[in-house]
Image 1 (tube, rainbow, N blue to C red):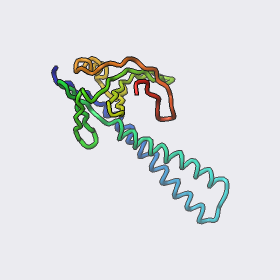
Image 2: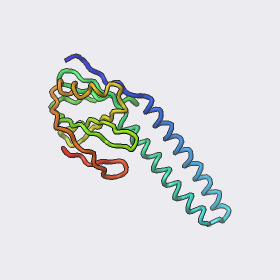
Image 3: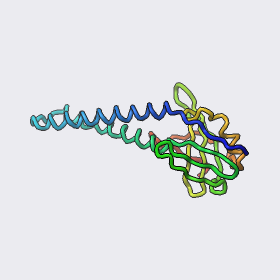
Image 4: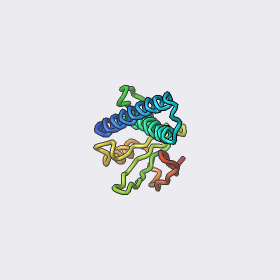
Length: 171
């Protein structure tokens, strides 16, 4: 098998980074406003609303930081090996095909669009999700995994678990 490299969509990474900075900056600004209000001995309903809104902004900032760290990888597939390469640190992690339980395909619906996804199940219980919008050559990944002797477990329906997580069928 010839070397195959995924082509990461850096526009998504930049967009996520901008949103993370926006929500983080807005959260810091709200903290400043809350402190100023409290200095004025203003314990009104407005302060409580600012605190609640700031928790939402802090969660969104955390969510974008986590998603940037979890989904910023390129992959190289060659005979018997898959390399997971971090976009942020350029660190290469070797995944031998015997460490991989298999992969499944999934579609997660959003009101505007349905996004495809490939989920790699590792034998140690970890899962790697490769969403369609992160890779320009997404349509080739499934065939290249099969060529690299990774077992296709099947198609799984997307089942929401929480706001930012899901249930996996082949755990």
